[in-house]
Image: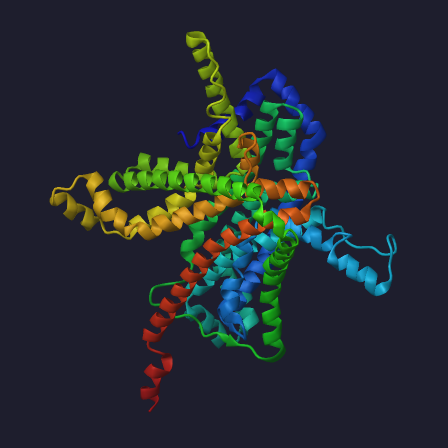
Length: 552
């Protein structure tokens, strides 16, 4: 209930707006003026980003799974690299590359002798540019999940289609793609939830959505309840996407994969087909990671003196401190909840732990608004009590300190820790718990002496994932950070907002370098999985080994 408190506050604000005459009037004013624009822009972003991530993610997943061509081995993990690049940082870098004073337009003017007004160039800071930036960053969600679905598909259906005259393209459209539809829906849903949660990109590009509207209503108009009502509308979008994702996951059991299934033989591509497949997989890596990374590196070299400034390393210290505390708190909570579910797997306990994982699907700005209201109320009540009893005003203890930030991070990222720790616990047999209890160990000693040593890898993985996500989190940090307390993400956002893009390079580059850690973990896990599959496939008897003796 404590973890779900911010969400309950947002939902309560929705009903408050329904039953309060004053708030109904405010809501009607928002609806008549800005909500239609928020809905329209959010819808355009969802449709555009959804189309991009499906096209890029599904095509690259199929090519790297079902085909063999030069470079496919390193492209399998390189396609995960855009995950390390936050969307708002990608937006900053492409603005620097494609702006009037950027290298692209400067080269065009130098090559053709053009001046201002002599040519037309697309404006990157637009809703179309926002769709492009978000699509380039979020397509790995679809790629990763869809590729896993393609890997799990048995060769029996593909080979049956080939015997019935289907070529590689027809096999993909009529067999592999329908079987992977639930996985594709799951990946697209995750990408769209991240799109709704984005603030840095849409704000920098001047696109008005619910996230920017919540900030404007809260800070510009000073309307706390109005901001909560906008947050409840955004939450409605997220809930709809979550329902779609759950439905798609429930249907995933229809995938035709089994422990004994053998993967279909890959298509070996040569010539122009191999070149086309390589370009189709390399271009998303080039535009989604390499170009932004090169631009960040160039800016960091231009502003090399920033790396030597004490204020910069103070930002690094603040960021690392927040990320470390948040990782520790969320992992401890996850271990507590998952071990409680293991000891008492009742419906109520399982439901409670499941409720605690809802925060990751909620935008950071919604959680921040939901955190600020109850903590501010508690601070005010505590001030009233201390002034009444002692005549002393202690100030803001919760809402004005990093306590509010840590609480918001725990709500937002507890799901990552729970899923990782629960996965590790599920691999420990219950017989080990029973044996330890027979030998006289208490439940706490079982956790300390048996489970904790076996969960070290899972705990470390969960800590790293939460650590890196906290480094990249922007909207919750902007809303809840104490005065005169900045992080790398906030500094990059402030420098970009002041059109000092080069000064945003060093803090943005630090965030990207830290974001490479989970990408490396994912690529290593995929590599181990591929090795295990190859070993399993090598152990399976090949059809020619069975039928050749019969033919002889």
